[in-house]
Amino acid sequence: MREMSGTATFFQWMIVFFCVYKLVSYLMDARRLIDMYNFYTHLLAIPDSDMQTISWQDVVGRLMVLRDANPNTSESIKNRNWTNVAKQRMDAHDICNRLMRRENYLIALFNKEVLDLTVPLPFFRNRGPMLTRTLEWNLSQCILDFAFNDQGQFRQLFLNGTHRKALSEG
Image (cartoon, rainbow, N blue to C red; front, top):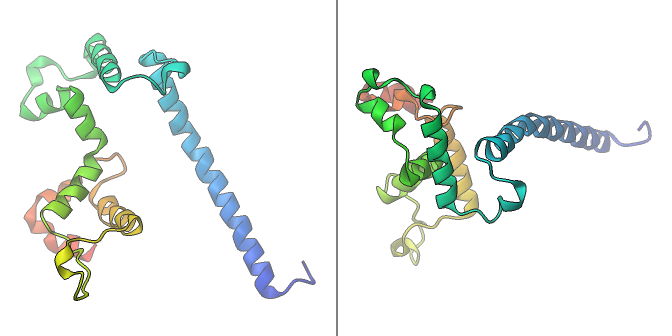
């Protein structure tokens, strides 16, 4: 390394740090993947051989059986109000909405035309929104990572209009 230039040494160290960072992130993700594997194989009783071919209806049915077999995981019937009922209700539509919560907010931003994605060129103005995969990924990372917490829940700060200044600064 003594005979290498400073630039080459710098890039080599950057590559080493990047590889170490990716290795640590893979190791941290491994626990989550193991938990997901255990959930599907042990709780839902879906073997590895059926994982690629099982239908969505079968997965939802097994989730319903699991929920009904474990009534202690939800709140008691005495304490139910409209928010608890919504959290306890579970069918294919609710499961899909929970899985696609972030994507649904991004779709709503496009449908309500909150984001102007038209290209400011004469021939492309009337064509509609132009969205590349990179732009979609950037919008998802910037807006949705700010709007949702680490557990995937929508931040309560966004639901109150009095916090607009703090949100715009954020």
